[in-house]
Length: 518
Ligand SMILES: NC(=O)c1ccc[n+]([C@@H]2O[C@H](COP(=O)([O-])OP(=O)(O)OC[C@H]3O[C@@H](n4cnc5c(N)ncnc54)[C@H](O)[C@@H]3O)[C@@H](O)[C@H]2O)c1
Image (tube, rainbow, N blue to C red; front, side, top):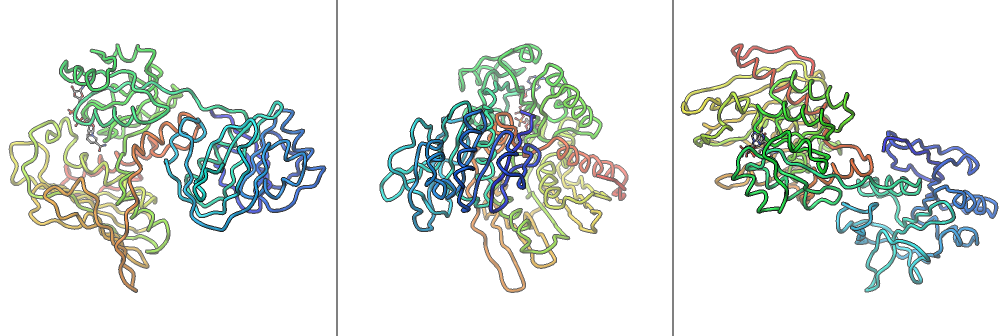
């Protein structure tokens, strides 16, 4: 799916087509069309242009008409023949509930209900010889919002919606353009889970629920875990890693072993030609991360990291406030997780396997921080306390301070000896602030924080967005099927590891400030 698609845009506004995948020409006339013409305009079409467009599709080209373009152009006989349908309207501007066809490769994995403010073009019956992609309810009738049909050697697509600036619109437009260019979604990918521990069932459930992915196999050293997987999912199980990597049904491996045991299976899976999802923390050292990145590049395979908390509704609410510019330029952040509790006596508390306290929640917190502060990290300093829980090797408390090239500062505190909690996030910008307050519960870590925006004019407690179910895996499947951008790149995860490694070094040097370029 790496071949770029050439698009001739006849649009009154900007089309949200990803420049990494589409070459968009918005200046040329129809004669310049190579693969796909996308039109989103209220400018009428001439008889000569309409007939040129019809011939272009007949010869194998693709045409995508957006918003009210088809309604404007359907007085032309050539366009009516191409479209096989004539919309009437539009109706009044209102919020429409648009429902995608979840079986169709173009609309798979879109939200089941997409709310968009737009005008609906009504229809007399369905379009001729077409496949419906989107429908909306209108006064107790079901209306066609988008469809596609073959015409001659080419393909015609209609999407009767305007760009609402949403990620859904961008996704949809990318896919219909690929479809109009004659592309099909890549075949579903068989997934093998390496490690079926505490988090294994969550991975399996998400994979089973995500079209484009198929749970193909599970491998675990433990016979009990293998039995549990076979019982839970009726899936083939493998006793050894090698056996799973030899399984032709497995195209992608999820490495869900403990942190010190990530790199070796990731390298083996890449060398066996599999795509890889690695659990967080990606690695315990930059050297390990680099070896994995190099191997993915040399084997031409996908490598990503399960930074699942990028989809947490409280984080998304905070991130969207920052991106909107509402708090100005973010320059200072404190973040915290913890309480006063005896650590577990499992590998999670044993430094040689866990990597140490920093690598646990740190791999989520630094991922958030690096998303919010994209500038280069210039110094890292960290201190640890070992005062109370001597039966485990992880530190009781760690604090990490980052200084960015812009002068911005961010800190992370994780403590198992904090009888009083601090807010989860305290973020200052030049025009306002965002604070994430822990829910008032005995174990608040898995509940979303209450997110409040402060400006000099007052405060607002945000309504959190609903959680995008299986967000990580939906994005992964979108990437595999259509080449859509991966949400979590291995390079981002490498930066995260570099911060945690520098912090670990700083602790060993008594809290010294480490000069870094991350
Ligand atoms: N993203 C998140 O929010 C999140 C949450 C929990 C755990 N995790 C991460 O997931 C990973 C696993 O955590 P867990 O809590 O499920 O651990 P776990 O110990 O419960 O499970 C690990 C499993 O891997 C198996 N295993 C170990 N080495 C193996 C090998 N070489 N071949 C096959 N199987 C092997 C073990 O038998 C065990 O069943 C860790 O990296 C952890 O940090 C991430």
